Amino acid sequence: MDKKIALGITGSVAAVECVSIARLLMRHGAEVYAVMSPMAHKIIHPYLLEWATGNPVVVELTGQIEHVDLAGKHEEHVDLYLIAPATANTIGKIAKGIDDTPVTTTATSAIGAGIPVLIVPAMHQSMYDHPVVIENIEKLREIGVHVMGSKMEEAKAKIPAPVTIAEQVIAMLTPQDLEGRHFVVTAGPTRGWMDRVRFITNPSSGRMGIEIARNISFRGGTVDLVIGPTGVEPPTSVEVVKVETPNEMMNAVMKSLKKSKTNAMISAAAVLDYMPLEKIESKMASGKDKLSVDLEPTPKIIEAVREKYKKMFIVGFKVESEVTDKELEKRARVKIDAGICDLVVANDAYREGVAFGTHTNEVLIVGSEGVVKKVPLSSKRDVAREIVDVIVQRIK
Image (cartoon, rainbow, N blue to C red; front, side, top):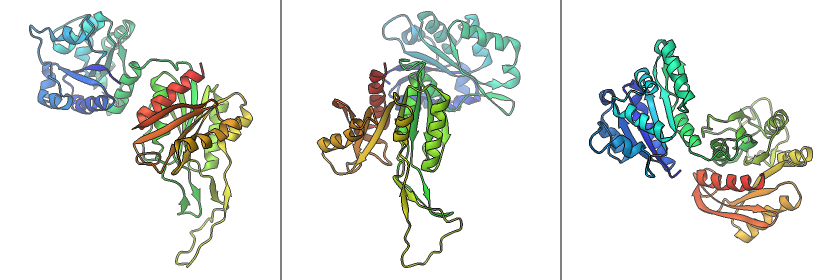
């Protein structure tokens, strides 16, 4: 996300979250410029925001007309103005066009220049429920300002988690080329239980599928994310269905496909190929010299989906080890030639930084005509964007 974002900060105790918000946006590639009201200085020091963003902090408006420099009608303005947290006082002033702090004046300039504005309220619930505050929030929405809902806890209207705010910002700055489309995405490992305390699995973290679901959501699509056991937090903007075994994943996928008209299924999960033939209901005795466990093949989810949904656009994943790109493409094409998948995303787990348990990946995106795109070693977030770009082209 190569964007510039102004971050307005007002005098709420929630201002302590601003460093996290700024850093999250920066990790997504944004340049952040902090703007602070005088009361915000009493919560956190401007030096902290200058350190966090790497940019000077606007604490007063001078002859440099900082509000116009950031949010005026010129080509160099910011792409979005985020005010988080926004107090009732600040919301009321912006709704009435009152400019008496750097935050409110920058808001007026941004609204007048047609720059997207996102406001995240923070106050006690008794203030949030005041009829005039409600009226002010609605007035802002009527003129095109985006206002996030607050978390109601302990009689307070609290700002959402920084990651939720960052996701909303990214969604607002991302082309909505998947609006009205629905996807089912699988991610993560599955487990095959041997007894009450032991199972077989694989080292998949689910990160690749999670990033694909996140990117689809950013672009306006809706997602059912069917995910196996993982410690990676899925995005809050998708419907998450947690499963454990291959059979549970199969059932969840079929249920999701049945309830919604789905434009594509993306099978990024590392589903076990074999699992124990039976689960011992008690704990197996330990201390034996040898232990044999009979395994049986698991049902192939994408094959079952293809059987039931002949015209479904299906994206499969193929993991190999220590093969050339040419051989990787050849093996990826097997399910395409068989008519099971429309695209296959293939990678080689032997290569450094690729596949399971990493934050990076390197893939070949293979279609019926051969390699559609080779994505070099990149973050899984960037790889997900490349994969979704290809999917968008194919399902138009």
